Image (cartoon, rainbow, N blue to C red; front, side, top):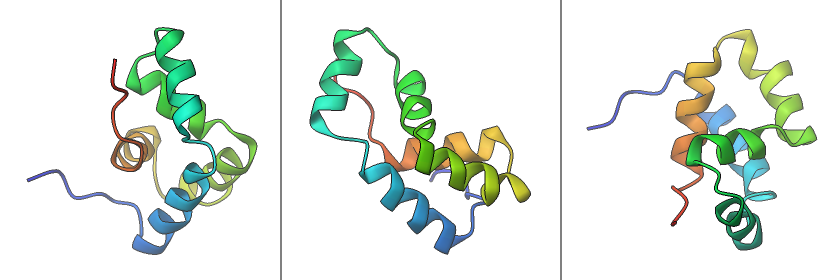
Length: 81
C-alpha cells in the first residue's frame, strides 16, 4: 500500500485537473525524446503557470516539495521509455 498523501482531497482534485491540461500524449513523447526522467517531467508539468500558481499559492501553505512531488507522481503516470 502506498503512503498516505498529506494533500487535502479537494486540492488533489484541483491539482489533477490542472495537470490534465498539460500532461498530453505529445508532451510525453517530447519528454521521452528529450531523455527526461519521470521526475523531470512531472516538475515540468508542475511548472506550467497555472499549476505552479496553485502550488505556490495554495499547496505550499501546508505542504513541501516532497508532498507535492508525491501528488504529481500519483497524477501523471510514469513515462514509457
